[in-house]
Length: 101
Length: 385
Image 1 (cartoon, rainbow over the protein chains, first blue to last red):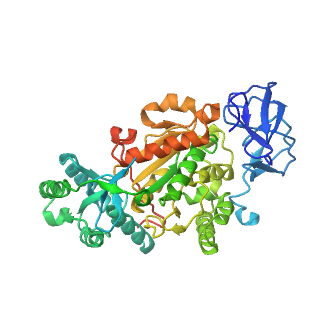
Image 2: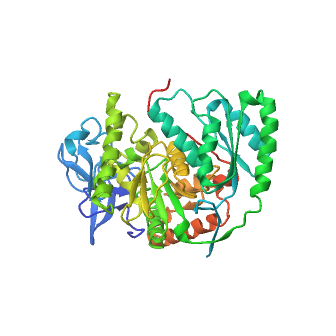
Image 3: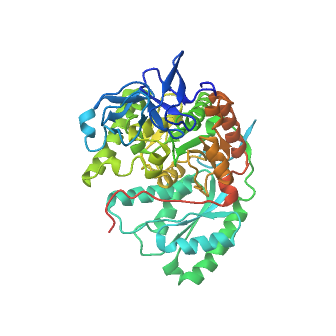
């Protein structure tokens, strides 16, 4: 697990979102470790404790990846540093569940 | 640490020695509870069904009740029925006999009402407690342990701390020959492909996928979809956005060793190792199925905290984050939030969980046992009549 100094955790190098391990505010510089590489992301929104933010730009319809796995898709274009939650992403399962197998 | 348990006639091992007062139908719940209240050493569960059932649910409910009495933490059972219900007390008691433990039954209608049943029930329950009171604890092995793993009130930290640390403890149990059962079929949606790929053989993987697809199909039958309740309102507030994200965190509880068997709700596994049991994600129902499947102890991870407990099996509750631990300490046995803060590793918390499991098996009480938490909810998958 990553150092306590980190503001957020990136579980898998393939992920395009990080999980905040403290309450983060818009404009803050969030330090994350992506694999062995340290990166600083400027936050565009407040990100509550344990919520997600984008590590890179995600196009509308593009897969959101966490744990190295798809967790859904962007419903609007998401900019690097934006809060990622129900307002800009959705599940790919449910009504359309058969489509994705 | 040497594990010490109660060896039952069917060869399984219990870590508690309860006499179960088992109502076969909701109508006999209060009588069963009053008998239990009057006789120390007994425990009762509340039955949310038992009548008005279609054939499929009739089988599911009967199996759950019978196998709950079969749980190795139960030393003897007094079955209490009303008399006219679909799941009869006499038939249930007769099926429970296969476990080789003492069983008695009573019908409220045949006994002549509540007061007469209470009187008879208290006498029978007392006799059963006296009968099983001198069963000794004997040294047993980790291979006798069947650990239930469950989560409820999850948050995004669950998949980063508590569930991963639990997975590490589970790996240790499996490597020593023990077993674990994970459930909650709808909370495998999005994680089922990885889980299926990590099954011991193709047939097991296929069965797991079929179970997940069956669940999804059942939801679509009502013109609904998973997003109607998965993730839950609380999950979303905590930061979990989709079922896929929740499932990927949930599935980490089972550890990394291959799944060896897939069983129906409340069915007793025949294989040793990690097992998947069909159940809904509603934790109360899932816990009840895990009790019936024969797990003797449970580790329950949570992000937001919950009082949930069960009278038959001790529930060890672990929270994923330190603010939550401070808030809900009275209901929690352990904090895994230290992993997020970097003050403990996953392996260190996993080791603490492993030791805690052994201590609880040997008799240490969990917070839910001290608080007397005892919830039970049988799954109903078909129309009620």
